[in-house]
Length: 256
Length: 350
Image 1 (cartoon, each protein chain N blue to C red):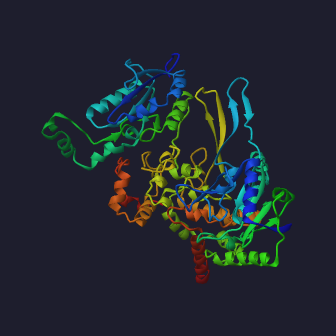
Image 2: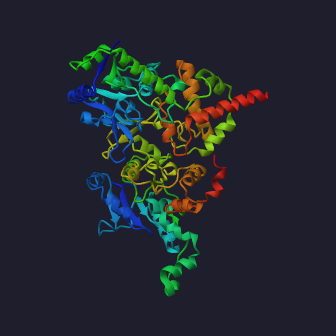
């Protein structure tokens, strides 16, 4: 950390809906406690002021253009600490859905006969382009994890995202299993840290926090097949959030 | 111990009285999902369901919460540490024999060797337990582990009969709970009804181990079952659900959660599971059970070998929650019988 009273924090966005920044804004009272500890110098969604000097950069969104690569590298060089904020920045999220097609094809689908005006590259998370010091998972970024990461940064501690599935937090809350309700849930292979928020409010887990380090996709295939889904449908379910790196259920059979 | 008969209305009134006297936890039906039950604090006797099959989490959550802040600290100079205050006494209602046995096993494990003061203090707040007999479903395996008529530390134990409930008054506290409730003397017919209930319960338990628990422990100790463990592991998510819903699992993790002032915080104990990949990960990066099949094996060894050897009884009370909770349909009895069959085949081949 550079010598100065409070570390300077900046928020940046790449290809995304900017919902993670909005989510952080919704911390409200906790934000007041946080600005006791840091100076926020750049935050497009929350303030007009800007600064090119900052110590901690929270970056949301995916890298989808050559220009993005230069920009994130610049942020990486400027900031002492770089944090990937949310699913787009950390695992690629919906942006990476386009990687199933040729870039030429997607340009023409979106921009038609103006396609040549734009450039695009396969979408990738920030974590695939530059090293990041901390990750906040989730779509939108999980607020409890954001606050935890924030505290870890200020205390100079490493933060290791939990390597256990959503089932753990769901069970600790005494929820009835989503499968018992006849719904399909990606909780058993999805990294927890969200306090099982979706399953606690009657939904299934969509897998927005990415897969655990060693997901048993073979088991997932068996279980989902039990509910009458084809491999294509299963892959489709995983693909909503988990496209980077390319997910291959077929290759997962050696997992054990 | 004495027995008597309490009619339905009278029991309802007794439960209502207990709830008015102080917090009472018991099985309730999930409003959104009829037919599914969970232990929770009761607001009225109408909420208590005594003919439930099972609950998602076992009643241990009353005195061993899934997530429990137990110590507050301040990183000031000098540092301050304060034990967090326990809440007051409560009663636990509608506990099945398997869960009564499990509470007894937790008491044993947490009192043995280095006693767990926090657990014991919370447990001491459980000032009464009322048990109730039950009908099994296809996952219940109580007869294989000998808990179908366990009573543990129940003060009162109820068996549903024609006239209401046959009540076993097992402790002076149980007598005190009954208080002014009308207690009818048990007739020969009541006792015959009770015996019939127990026979019928025994008969309805269909999930059974192919050997006794002693022989099963020997099979596990002999080893050579890797092929079976690997088959199970191929289907296992390592999601930890089986042990997180287990009434006898007692492993936990401890973490400090600091507040945003970066000065004060709390130390929190959270249920943990040996099925999770990082459970046996130690400093330096070594994982004692890094392979999925090693974790699967550990679960069976823990329940039916290590603690069986240590305490003379399997640390499984046959509630079947692990099998119900497994999204991958890994069934405790089926896997155990696969292990037994595999071991028997291997023996014949020698």
